[in-house]
Length: 401
Ligand SMILES: [Zn+2]
Image 1: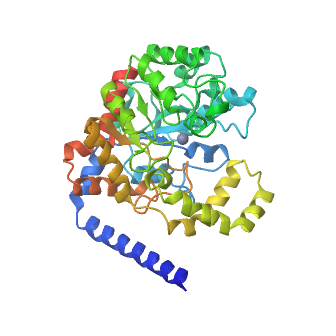
Image 2: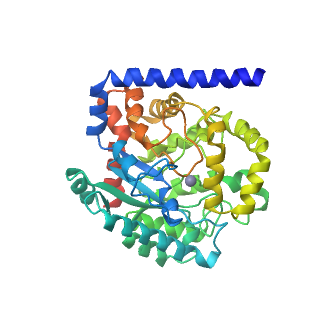
Image 3: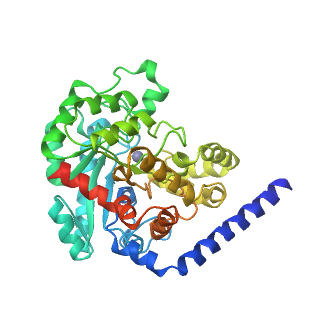
């Protein structure tokens, strides 16, 4: 009975929240205009994985958090497409080829809609596309494991368009130790922090003009990078540890270091990195649906993306009742802005890389609400524009030219 009542309450709350958003938003056309006229850059999106599964992301996709049409409605001018090669799905020897295939897929998609999407390599490319209302597609590689231990692969990926490199994903590799491993497996790690090869890669990225991304990097790795980098760094999709203690988030001393380095933290919207209560609640839902999940695991390989998409769809309704709201995302943005300045914060949503998003930011079409909420929270139009994309442009110009 209690559960049933709390379910009704949650739904009522969600309904009230939506109505309030709708009323406030529909009364406020200038806000929408401010949003659409701003340059908007999102530094992390995993939709390319769906394309690799054979799904059409150039048409309206019923299950995705983003696709060509949704990105347009969200006003996105520059989208970083994450090139992530699953270490569960591929063997070490296949990583690089799998990354190449993902880049080829993005090139193919852009060739299908040349007046809508175009891969960028320079600052001039970004401005050219902006003037022509073409969405800039940037390649960000998530996880240095794709390099193996071959330094020449950095230049190869740079030539194909990689403009940021995440040193690690959750797995440690030949470059560095990851945040997950430093948190969960510290005593068994062969190396903690940057390796010699990792240092070589950081120098090569600095030389070529590739942003170093420390989202997913361990704390020791982070401080090693801060020590040697000659260029500003980014965290492409991380949030604030003080507000949500998770190893994927950044502690205050790390935020201060990024501010001092001239870098930018692009806030991740994922409920598990925004609200410290979410993951425990989500675990309970997973447990309650163990039987259905087992059936899915029999149908798909449980380490595959196909399984993950099916599981996310199955649990979406239940998890929509426990997610935080857009207001919690604003808290993270505001925290970083207050601590190290508004020049050092942006958005790195993680759309289509996570199973569900906060209330009010369910998919990329909801981004105009973020602009409204930022304005409601006292940010000026100029500050909002910095957060939405101008800070990205600034760091891209500084590092990637
Ligand atoms: Zn990630």
